[in-house]
Image 1 (cartoon, rainbow, N blue to C red):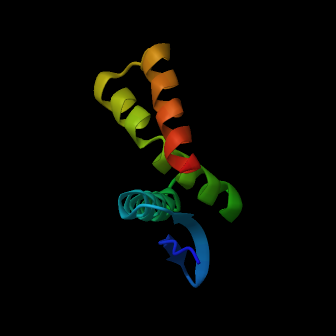
Image 2: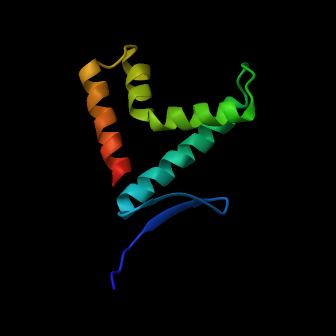
Length: 96
C-alpha cells in the first residue's frame, strides 16, 4: 500500500487544486488571495464588466503578477526571453 501526501487548496468549500508540496500549495493560495483583492479593486473600475469577465481578468492578472510588476516599474514590456522563461517555470510548477 502506498501513502501519498497531498496539499489541497480549498476555497468556499470547493477544491481548487492539489499539490505534492506545501510550498506550491501556499503559492497558489497566495495567488488566489491576490486575485480576490484584484477582483474587489476592479469592481470600483469605471469599466463595466460581467462578473465572470472580472473574475477571469483578476485571476489572469494575479497569475501574471511578476510580468505586471515589471511593466509597472519599468514602463516597458519584459524581453521575450524573460517572458518565455517565466511561462516555462509556471508550466513546470503546475505540472508537479
